[in-house]
Length: 319
Image (tube, rainbow, N blue to C red; front, side, top):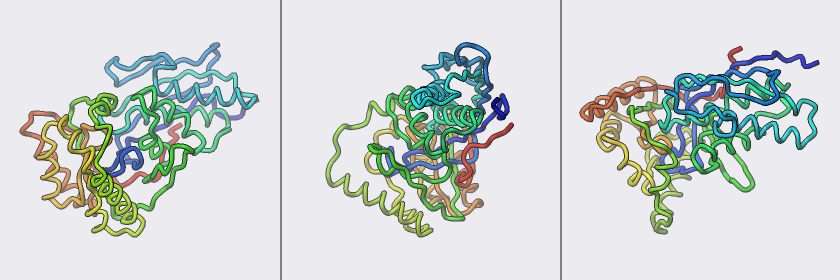
């Protein structure tokens, strides 16, 4: 008889992906917002998503069309392949969307991570936390057409993550300087990742590539050495930001305001429309965040502001 509780709730947080020069290879978790997923052992003959709140009726409840459902189903398929004694377990799933859709903050990743962590816990943790990563990456492919890990890896593992390789998959947890904070501004518009990827150029100039990967190396080195000046000089995206920023009303004004207020750097979170700024110290992040919010006001958009250190804890089991 399984000794684990029959029902569990897990919170998984928002993430900032790309982090300027780290397209599809860098991401970090923040403390809020996030999603809560409730998973229970089901007596039904199949796993089901029973309820989704906070999505305005936009998200599908079909298991293989929802990132939470996909992640759990792919995990269970792997247990079947391994001949695990609990591979036939079915689940009832409820999702509380506590963060905006299409925000550039990893909304789809938060749901899939919370779901698969809860289901794995109910089964007695047949998988280590890092072993869940391929399952949530599969869910990302359903959500946006690409199985990238720069949202799901930090959401799952916490911290600041480098995706060193996709084939074979390898992720590296980076050092987080003690006084590194983030201000994230979310303009209240929706921008789908799949649409934002379509406008990207397929080819880039060699000179631009050299600058970009040098900035990436500088940013990682700055993190590892807690060198805030090096972080500031390296936090620059010359390839993707100029294109994607055209889809975000007021981006240039917001970035300019953040830098003038003392941010180390400022860029697009994921595919947007959210905009993040890294700062040294909580007080600086609060000042920068207010400047960013003031700068977006002329565009008559509502906005949400989040101030956070990097969330090194990862998903939280609530019950």
